[in-house]
Length: 359
Image (cartoon, rainbow, N blue to C red; front, side):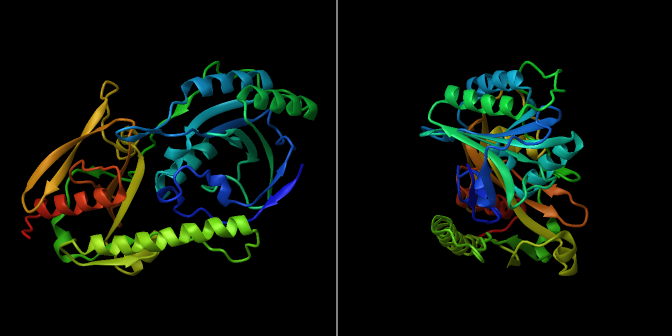
């Protein structure tokens, strides 16, 4: 069983592609080859389950599923050290780097993708490449799918037994170990906006299109075309909403810190997207286990606000400003919202009120 999937970087896919698995945007070869050292080294599981849609779009239930999967992995000799919701991994560029750095620190050797869709389940196992992309283009990846989880796990176990690897993983935890929100704050979290923004140009990253160079697979090209059309529309919206920003700003393509400094961009606007509780954890807020929701401050121009309670597990966006020299993060009010457009408007409105801008 072998097939080649065309190559593509997922870029900032978390903003647009929703629950499309991130491995759909990396080239790999589908095989039944069990990763080397699967039964002697540590693995990490990146899982994706359908979201729940009611008054808010919320993270889907996964505990029962992962408990069943982990029990099966234990019998297979797979030391799944971490279980991480793909929503959290793709929350931001910084979150991907934070989680992949942890994987390196804990000597993860295999990445296991577990995906549940309306049509069934998939398991992919790939050598961890040590980067935030998780696996290398062109890698041979163990791939299986089934409409029934029991059948899938049974078949995966059969292939692992057939591989007949020497077993060294004996001290495997009995229960899955969930990774939650790792901090993306590099220095200090500040719940304000600096007055120097009045005379400093704010860099605002555009949403990035995907490169279709050398892609020949028609289905992949179709997905890229759809993705890039959405990116173009989003960048038009971004420009429109940023026109509300009261100070000087510039739309820029994503660039490293050195280039930001070289261009004298002292501040950059960024965002994070995940469940409200995870976003707070990533931004170093103190989050109590008893909290079931969080109150967002919604600006009502020019100088009033209202509040909006959003459930802890609802998917939200939160914009923040990073100081590129000190690497402090300025978040202002907690004004996360369910769409990036509303979250950005909230940030601009609250910043304007805090810095006493009257419209």
